[in-house]
Length: 292
Image 1 (spheres, rainbow, N blue to C red):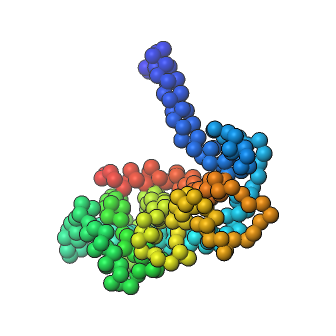
Image 2: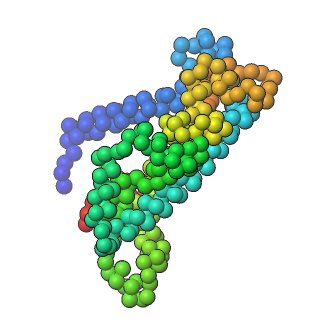
């Protein structure tokens, strides 16, 4: 057994201190946003760096949750994330399973998938395709053009190929077809890798911003990130949320606290979901990327 020396202990302490400082630097913006969202305007103006308000006021949160535009965009993003992630996983998993088996033209199709990882049509041809297929001004314009992620497909395909052939052969001898094998054998064994890419797809849909501006002209269909951009960029968040849709409150919060409250509300849901999938995250990615 190797003896732990003073140098080893010094390295461990130094490493722990460095990681602790790194964690604090990552948590600091969240603490600042959280504190400002609950502070009063006078205290915000007097403090150069506000980390803990003296008086906690929830006016900014009451304001944004009384906003029809903000709540509608939040629900739109939840719908986009749930439905979009389900579509992504369905098409990615089924295509990956097909390419993992020996099918006619499988290598050609795999090459076409790899080709899209290196070359893309570009923004204008993609926009014209969305317009020609009638998806413009539809939430499906944010889902169907990117229904399958090429990298995700390749990793999941590799995972399926690593499953022992004896399982396939035993299922075929019992009279199972490909649909039964995929649903009752492959999917239960694929929970780690599917959970990992479920997180990837969900975060991507939740953070959808540019495509929302590009394909959706109706503000009532904008996802939360587009509304958040309007709140943060415009000098008057109340105007960005649509003054006509606001429920007038007794106290009107300052724009700065509305901005911070909106940022926190838009970020919090995906942070809550992450711990439930985190245990599958590293295992799922590694097990699908290493050929055994």
